[in-house]
Amino acid sequence: MTNPANYMLVRSVSGTFATVSCVGGVVAPDVAISVDSVAYSNNGGAGPFTATLSINSGLPLNVDGFYRLYICGTTSIVDADNPGLAPAGDGVNPGTDFVRSFRISPPGGGGGGGGDDDDDDNEAVAASVTQGGVPIPSTGFAPDRITRLPAQTSAYKASGLSLEIPSLSLTMPIMGVEFNGTTWDVTWLGKNAGYLAGSAYPTWNGNSILTGHVTDANGKPGPFAYLNELKPGQKIYIHNDGLTYVYEVRTSGLILPSSIRTLFRHEEDAWLSLVTCENFNQQTGTFANRRLIRAVLISIIPTK
Image (cartoon, rainbow, N blue to C red; front, side, top):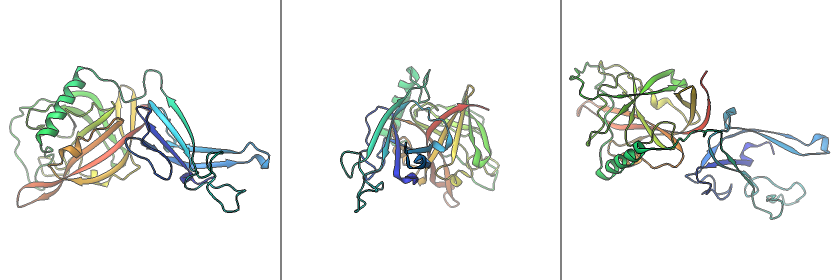
């Protein structure tokens, strides 16, 4: 009873769960919520028999959505009175999961905010980008050399948001980068993170895409230079108006500059994609790959 693997907790935006059972595992677009530890008490054998779950890295479970808890009778929890130690089931049918569903809807909403005309514009840009095969922007200059920048021709929009990556000791403003019909010009981002127009606005439901330089114009490491060191389970914060939106890293990998559909993958829940360049080719003077970090919103807490 005290093995966290005996339990599975998932979230759905719509309330229609793709996940069927513990044996089938979590199925997208459902989002897995961590079960970190379990404490069991039988009160000296007299009952009640209670398993207390520590979940979500100890953070408040307060993101708006539908949740479902599976107690895994299809995989691991067995009936102690059964000599064959067959899966215990849901209390009626052996070999099934015991399932309970619930809804969390914080007052005023709990992340994954709404949309407006700008959201409609973003959808139009996203469709244009993915259908047109626009390459992922290059977010790095040649390392170990100075690159002379032209006069700035693109103005970035201050968002009032900031990005923090505690494990990399990084904090930076988030600036809005418009799509100009062919690309997002990130030449002058400097020490800022850039929110790519066409993706979901950061902290809203959908796939929010932020980029930053891996190498700056002086040939030195940029703010996203060590993005490849992020590991699943580590946290990324977006600060906005007194609240901290906590995202948990789920995947890290390399994609091609042409993999725009992968970058702009549609999501129902609130996801965050961080992207930067990797593997500079001295002969071509370009970066062969893009590093893509994907993280999902797990909690919203007051900013300290």
